[in-house]
Every structure is written in structure tokens, then in C-alpha cells.
Image (spheres, each protein chain N blue to C red):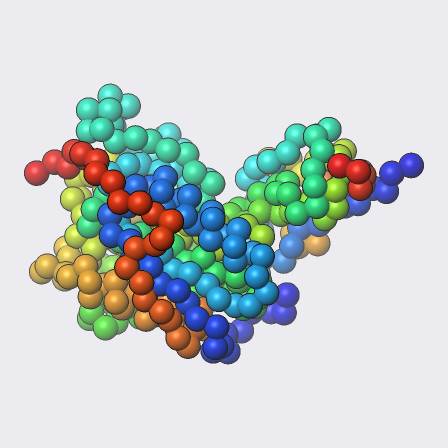
Length: 83
Length: 244
């Protein structure tokens, strides 16, 4: 069974919670390590979060416009190094 | 990444490109290319693009069509294209007289977190205003700089692979009828310009020079190299409509 690797929200250094402003990949699509997967929004700046491994996005845990915190799981990638 | 603190000056330079009047798409292409190159390096060299754009409207992730103050046909009549972009910030009209400042900087490697990066851009504008004797402060929504007459600088940045792009826009002396075609954010703060606040002409080159110095400083660059143009940009001619 493929490893399930979480996509973790980085610490953006903000006092207010960032929001998820866009999922750049749909569930089921394949990604390569480093591809942009989800975009977070702070006042005045968007921050792309990259895929930690290659594989298939199996789960987008956090819906659009939800507030998140650093270290929170945003989604899951089923690792597949052949992608 | 360690917590952000006053950045220690470092020896890697900031490559500053003065681009003049540049099409928005060309400037975006150049930024994306520089992001790609910068993210593949392991030093702290960054770039700063400074330009003006022909008239167009961009809507950032915090903007919506509700912030457009006139009907679509008005934008069409004025030959103003409306573009959705992936930067932060709200709706902005770009036009000559407004300085676009695009730092392409590896903030991961200079240990600045995204929220702090925005604070530092705001600090650079306020430092510039201190030199110009314009009292200025961060806008209420935290993504611009305001003075007594309203907001004159707006932040709309993005970070990809630890490298910044997009940036900030400073109204030096743009045609305000164009700038006010959109509301810049949900609170709809009045927009103004440095020239209006100072009640006299403000030289673009003075603002440009001050911003280069202060942006370099707040991002911890102890040296910068200045270039006019960029080898990847080709000079072309295009007719644009600007109301007299």
C-alpha cells in the first residue's frame, strides 16, 4: 500500500490565521514533489505550499476559505515515486 | 525557518532592474522566470524590478468584482483590461505615474517569514515618506500605506518556492480618475497619491531611488547593482489610451 504523506501548513509568521485561497490541484490528480498544491492567503500576500513527495492527491482536508494554523494537515498525498 | 528578526546584512547583492514602462504580462513573465532561477540557487542574491504599467486593472485574491466601481462597458470604453491574478491584496488600477515594485527575493534563505515580509515593505515606504516629509502609517487592513488624504501604496505580493514575486504599487502621480475606478479592498479606503499629499509635483526618479535604498535596507541587502532594462525584455511599441 502506498505511503500517505500529509501536506502540512507552514508557519507564515502571522498573528492572524491564514486562509486557504485556492487548491491548485484536484483530488485524484498526480503531482511531483515541489509542485504547487495549495495556496494560502494572508493580508497582502499569497503563499504556495508545495507537494512534499510525488504521488496522487488523495484528500484535500481543508476547504476553500477556511482559516488554518501552522502545522495543520491540509491534505494527503499517496506517494508514488513513478509519477 | 527561524523566527524573523531584524535581518543581518549580508553580502549577496540585490540586482535592481529599472524597466521603465512595461506591459504587465511581460513583467509577470520576467518575475516568474526570476523566481524559477532564484529558487534554484543556494545564495541570497535577489532581484528588484521597478517599472510602470500601461493602464489595466488587476484583481488580487482579496478583491472581487464588487470592488469595481463602474460597469464593464466603462472599462471597455477606456480600453482597460481586467485581469485576475494570484497575488494578495485587492483590486488595483495600474497606469503610468504609479510605481510597481517587484522584489524577487529568497525570503526563506534570508529568514524572513511572509507576514514579516509585508511589514518590511510597508516599513520601506514609510521610511521613504519620512524623507519626503509625508506623515504616513500602515493602512488599517495591513496591506498598504496611508497618509492624511488616503491610501497611496498597496501591497499585493506572492511567495512561491520560498521566493517572493508581485509586490507593491506606489501612487506617485497617476491620473486619479483611473485609480479610483476600483475600491482597493472591502473597507474602501479613499485612494490618493504622493503628489496630492505633498501638494506639489513629486519626481518619479526620487521616489524610485528612495524605494531602492529602503527596500534593500529592510530586506538586509548591504549592496545592490543597478541596471536599466533586462536582457529578457524586448522593447516594443504599443498605443495605449490615457485620458488627458
